[in-house]
Length: 83
Image 1 (tube, rainbow, N blue to C red):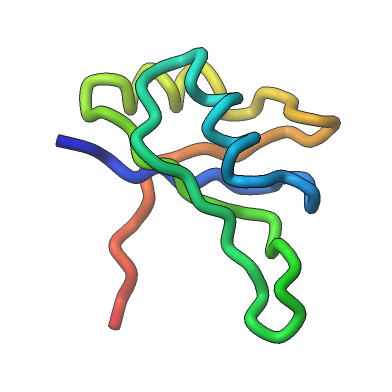
Image 2: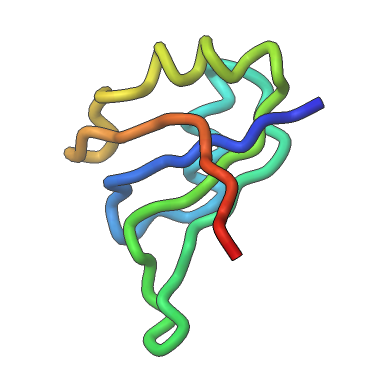
């Protein structure tokens, strides 16, 4: 099984590949995505990574508040989106 983690305060130039590479040193990353503005196609400064269940808490503890390319990341378990 997997869990989805929210990653906030990302530098604008971050790619999904950059995100997966950064987090893979802390656990198994299944997928990653950066959320983009529909009008401009620019990053909105946050994204999501899907990780193995057993690695989720370890990754949150290791990376939340840590600096990535000059910005302190916010990492927590993603909340289910309300319809």
